[in-house]
Image 1: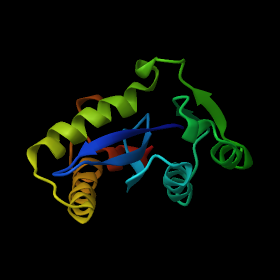
Image 2: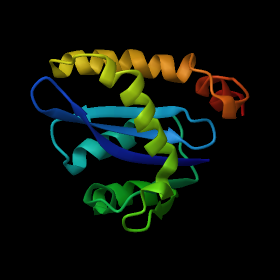
Image 3: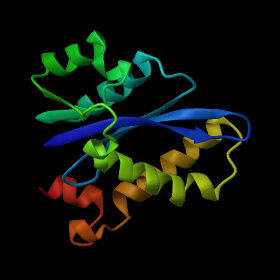
Image 4: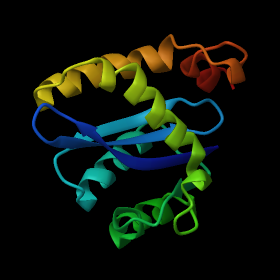
Length: 153
């Protein structure tokens, strides 16, 4: 089992918020997600801890951002015997699963809606993630939803 994570920005009526998500490479299932108004380490650690409440992967892939190279983040992975994999510098395609997911969430939800508040964003993303994980069929998953594929295998 390989998971990866990244952060993207979500444009708002005024400014933007950050979205962190963890995706399972095999099933495309979004294991955990969080939003924040800052790029601090606890934001990403919170997403990781939320995911590890469910299960844990063998390998965890990230870019080389300061959130993911911090001792706090890597110590959690090490203490759970999870192998750490990091993208090469400037190599966004090394983490293609989460990068492709960002395109989906933005084109299927964010760009189609006017989002005025953090609460509106959280509610909208929560609904989108339920749809994405439980209903959105993927050709690469034999036309199954990520939830079905993740828990079937």
